Length: 503
Image 1 (cartoon, helix red, strand yellow):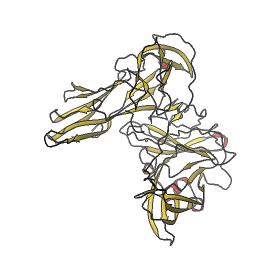
Image 2 (image 1 turned 45 degrees about the vertical axis):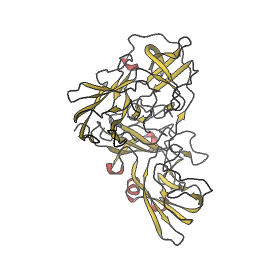
Image 3 (image 1 turned 180 degrees about the horizontal axis):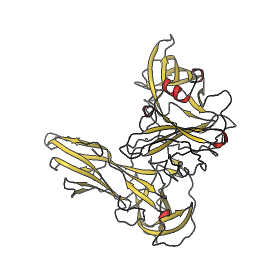
Image 4 (image 1 turned 135 degrees about the horizontal axis):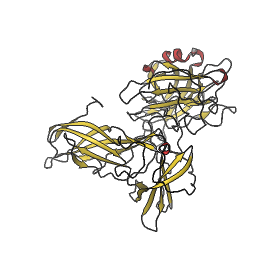
């Protein structure tokens, strides 16, 4: 079952990036930029770095009680050069630092620190805008502060002279709590729907309203924005929905996947000792999103207690993780190989286990068997229980460290869009790029932990990457993570406490 799918200092450094490929090697300040292909250049005459632009002056939406979802179609458009923010921390427990990347004449690039309070962790820009709803009499009936993630799923060119492509990630912002660094940006001449990452559902009666979206004062000050171009207003007519139409859930349709054709790779030699520069480092992050679900069946049967958790493995090191499976006869198994890349080119491969096809209706994909293992340990860190989750479709689901040298900002695949193969496949390629992570949510019986009969006390959720050591890495000493939990309570009324990571 797939999971959900959000460094210190700043100095002036010169940086460049190949469009849609990877971040550049970082300077002393760890800065990453998107000059050149990202459209760096002089500021547009008379225009601030970002304005709010209304796509349509009026829209009509169907009322869907109890809450009506409304996207007013107000876009933040970058002018002159890309609007880019770098978000980083030096370790998983360090404070988050936010900076803006500014491009000047002659291709110069510098990072300007911004107040960390402007970032809502790695989820986006906190209270970037305020959305005000007024009825036909001008009375305010609703207000909503808007969290803004510049990395929207459907960034759009704002005009015919805009660059054809954007180098920035378009997978939203991080939901995973252990992200290390991120890049948020809007390409020059492109627009991002400010409401895409926000809750814009309201309790509204039938009628006509005006919705005004305004960039808040802290961001106007931080970005030097005038009031005149920092607001947009749309007239909204709420009408009766057609019969049979139900409510639209908040965020419906927001989870996208990106799928592009993967190239067939040339034949290469088998390597037993690949160079370190061509190796990834698999980093299992501490378990997160941990919940105790108590199933009260009936008075004649005791409750069943399941411990659900999220497990994430990230890619650090020097290169991506690339595992490919090939048919060996006509059986239900693919022979897996790990491929090694150096300077963007394949230099070799090595045997790496097997892939099996999962025929479950909600799966229907090839799973690599040797990716990770999950265990529950007791207070002495002795194994108590093994998760039955043993096979994985490797895919980038969460940004982990996009400011890492060589990190990919736009992976060839995102989520589960087309990279896990069909039952009849001869060849399957599963990739996890440098700087990205793969998350699985263990919520199915057998994959989570049944703790009904475990005594109260301290336990650890252990996540092991590369458990059979068949994959080549730069470092195999960091392939295990532990997350402490404490079970308490009484039968039928168990409790769970999860201390903060690292105390």
